[in-house]
Amino acid sequence: MSTATSPRTTDAVTTPRTTTAPGKTPGLAPGGVPVLGHLPMILRSRFEFIETVRNAGPVTRVKLGPKTAYFVNDYELLAQILVSDADKFVRGIHFKKMRNMVGNGVVTTSGDLHRRQRRIMLPSFSQRRLAMHLPVMRQIMAEFVASMPERQPYDLMGPVMGVGCDIVTSTMLGEKTPPEVLRLVREAVPVFVENAAIQAVDVTGVYKHLPTKSNRDFERLLNAFNEYMYSVIDDKFRNGAGEEAGLLDMLINATDPETGEKFDRTEVRDQAATILLASTETTANTISWACYELARHPRIFAECRAEIDALVKDRDWTDIEIGRHDLPALKRVLFEALRMYPSSYLLSRQASVDTTLGGYAIPKDAAILYSHYGQQRDERNFPHGDEFDPDRWLDKDGGEVTASAFMPFGFGAYRCLGESVATLEATYCLAMMIQHWDFALSDFSEPKMNATITLSPKDLKFLFTKRAESGAHDE
Ligand code: HEM
Image 1 (tube, helix red, strand yellow):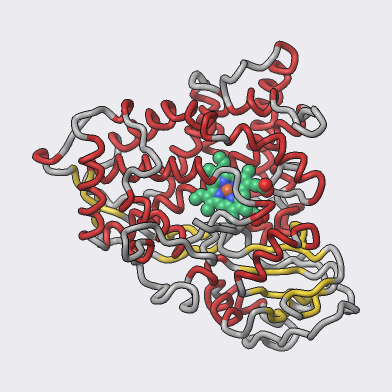
Image 2 (tube, protein in one colour):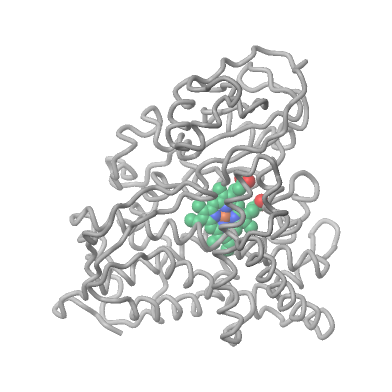
């Protein structure tokens, strides 16, 4: 499966100086207004903006007030930005804005620093290390699925994000993490995410200095998080980290294969905060969107349930390893949810030199915008792109189709480190839910796509009903 992407909203980009880069000047995208340019459209609807600009050509100019950004809608050019010319297109302002939370975490850096961080971190995300976290992941999931409320309008996003927080905290700090720390992380992550979303659209950069409740909560929780993390990290630096106990130990023990260097205490904290932030809302969005489509497509739901029953038989989930070739129908549902609702729907880069893209001049410092949502719903890449059709991932021989424009986890130098974790977590969660519950949308549900820092569902409520005893395989 080919892939590529990253997240965040538009605004707040650096104005490039007048171009001396060779090449054509891209046309101005339609829909702008005098003075404010495309900002009103972006603030009104990110989707209207993406769709309008996407149809205007492979590279177009977009005006964000007085500033100019370049919107790229061509997956081959994206491959150039993210792979072959990755050093010419570094991470833009939105990633830098996350630094008050994640410091120099790997999701904010570029170039040599980023390469060094990635080299050190990669082994912690290998299949072997991932397998070590499976039991705790399955246990937390199973408890959550067993505790879901029956026949009540139920918004999954908050609870699934809470489960994601528990999983990442427990894999990071170990199964015996004190309950007050789990509670702290559950409280902190939504506040961090909300604060990041507000700052992402704050073109002035003033918001973070205002005495708002969101800022006060953010400061309080960030201080509490840092205090706890540094106490654990310092203790591990003093007394030695566990051999391969938790993800935090792995980050402390890990060495750069090229230089033998390790992370210092601040870097360990920054990477831990990055993983927490990058993993929770993104995965919860994907699970919620997949449930939404499953509730609307009974045939596909039944197909998934049949293959889950065949895999589980009379076993307990603690004995079940979902292998690479297991549950193909459910995996197609997941692909399709990631295609239609990519969490990282709008991303940015910044040109570090004068350069060209597809023959168009891109001046140094120019902000580059691109959208996996735009790419993955484009009729030219995915016919009937607005329709949920997991069978599009099947070729006529029943094999798996690949698509170059499918990039929900990014691509190239900055590709998501947690892709396997996210896929596994979502697959287990959905499989357990489908096995035990019938899905329906509540009458109170008016689902909308909420495009802030990620693409989450809003006002999406389910009615879950316990599966009729005849078919269930309860643990
Ligand atoms: C469905 C869930 C997820 C989606 C859609 C997603 C998407 C992405 C995307 C698009 C990027 C690339 C950003 C860029 O190009 O600048 C990224 C980076 C990253 N993600 Fe994920 N992610 C998900 C889950 C996770 C999880 C579960 C973890 C950790 C356990 C994680 C950790 C990271 C990290 C550390 C990076 C930075 C990689 C680097 O810069 O080298 N993500 N993610």
